[in-house]
Image 1 (cartoon, rainbow, N blue to C red):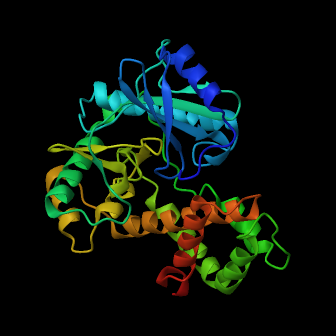
Image 2: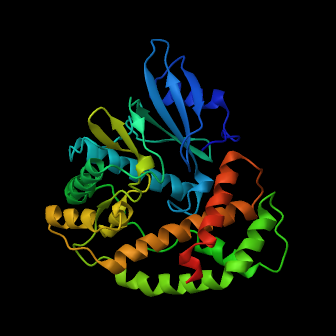
Length: 332
């Protein structure tokens, strides 16, 4: 997130890093990067660096509807990442370091959870970036290996639900278009924007529901999927391509990952099918593409119906909402 976390103090974070990970006397530098989580660069007195991620459990509905269930979902996800790195020997997985008691994630109070990662020197990707052909090929081959790692991931990975986590938020927003939204500076503009697009959103939800039943994986079809293998979740470390942000990992059809690497030429999908021996379903690819857009929209609407301020994060959420609600997906 671009804006610093307001509900967790730096001294409380430093105390957890010392008590739970044994990181004593560290300096914490907030990094305004990414989306959905808060990040710090941590240095100990000897100059050793770590990367710390903190999640607000109130903002993780895809992991669970309560703070406890969201934390449990996050723990399972990060345990899966560690198993994929260690047991499956997937060297491209950036997995968390464990606490002194062997946990991959630690609760900090009721609302927050922290994880500590080894610092990776490299160049991160950007969301929306077009990967060069060699990196697209490397990413597809990484996904082939990930999807084949069923046994090491099995004790930890959970099914990735095909349902829409923020559907309740979206339906409440659609029902409340006749009343003023007063959460903050983007509330009324968001209501006006959704009002103009409401018919298209209803049509899109109907198409989503028709496809949902058809994409539920049959026995043996579900594989460990990352969920968001886009360029912003990649780091180029020398000649190596690394995949980060594993909180979305889950058992699903391979199309949950493959739609995101498809450039429209069919080359990436053909490569995946050749190297994995799996055929891909066009309806499932369309479904997961649709689900991504609806999920982003529901998160933005939840934000703008709640108390909020004008920050770099809410500005970005607003621009994303405008782009989506004025897109071809809504108008057709």
